[in-house]
Length: 285
Ligand code: PRP
Image (cartoon, rainbow, N blue to C red):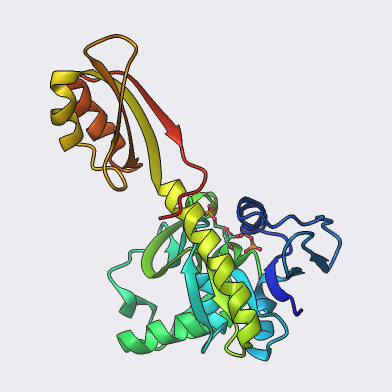
């Protein structure tokens, strides 16, 4: 039986969460950081530890079948490679930044200027779209230093917390795109491998849905149960169980993690007591 070859970042911002996701979907790997590849013990998967920037080409060539990679890298180097799933971690944006001291009125201020970046294609496309012509200087790594050493007037790089820009006295002036980790798929995938990928994708979706939700348990007097159910839709409908104490029920349901504080205020106001909110590991609908 063939194995699905999945590339993950060898080191860098995506590595740990990529490995964590594989673990959460039940793929156990004997992880050795110095290894180039490792086979899963319990699933037809081989993990390749590769340099971020090399992964798109390996996908295009079919050397690997799928990859956990930043959208930013895929947009820069991965034309024709499909995204099977957005993974919700390693969020960042690709931005143009200039020295804080520069008066910036718009992209036309960079006409004829030098922009240092590891994202030449992304920058060129953006400049073309806006009808601005600038000189792109390709640098790999420590891009933010470029204006300080007189190499360029502006830079374009990924920004996450913004602390690297801050430390280098730069300010963000244009956002070219927003990015997160994705599951990318090679355009040349056999049917057999597609079937393995479908199983992986199903497991990932269960984990992601679980992360978006919370399991909630609470107690309420029986005459308040309907009021409370009205604000707790649940997956199908909430579970209502009698408590040992007469006249009381326990209600169990699932709520979106983004709205649970608002819902909890409402539940308290409607008479709920002993509210417990728990994480959900996986959710299969
Ligand atoms: C990236 C990027 C910036 C920094 C931005 O580097 O090149 O330097 O992160 O993050 P921040 O806004 O949270 O400060 P990374 O650490 O991924 O390593 P790299 O230099 O290999 O790209």
